[in-house]
Length: 259
Image (cartoon, rainbow, N blue to C red; front, top):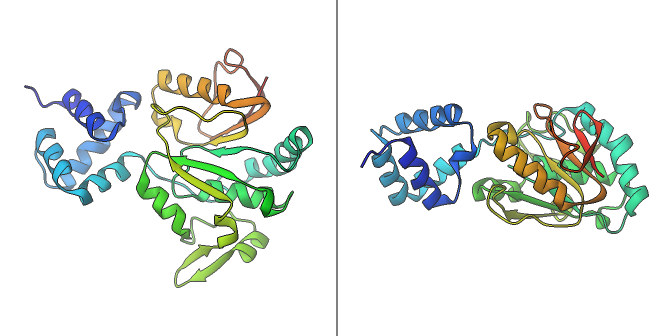
């Protein structure tokens, strides 16, 4: 048997249900090869044997694979558009008491917690509930702790930073009242069923790592998950070429409305 990258992709899927075929191969293979070298391992077969026998190395691999780069209020001008245009429109269309919001591929929690703070300018925290999902249980665990460094929270508006963060040594702890507004759950965008009847879905700077086919499938599923006049917020490095065909109108470069 040839223990090549094709074999490795299948072995990874058997272990994790992460489908590496959905990722840009050259980029992902380079990342994995770098990690294998870092661990002093020769070949994919030996690395898979290590992953099966060492939980710490397995968790390290999944964490590395899922590319967790996140920060609060990333691209502040887009969050300003959210504050001035998107949230008021959602409240006008659906009210304050029943908004369903999904932060998909939420990483370490920066984005769902940013959403809570953004909505807190428009309604009481008791009305805000964010459903936040990620494929990586390690980053979900970090998100639930809610401890961040200077760089992560640099984009948080000063009044919200003062209100909702406490300095702990060199780090910053987000308040329990913000944490209580977020429900975290493991979810694989490529494999698991999508929740339905959402008013806002946020999924940013994740799909750039996927193939065009995988992206198209995910965007279609997001469209199916939204109610009419719901909104999808994507990353500044992403765009939906065929947005009309899958049921979206374009609000601006990064916000799409469900028709």
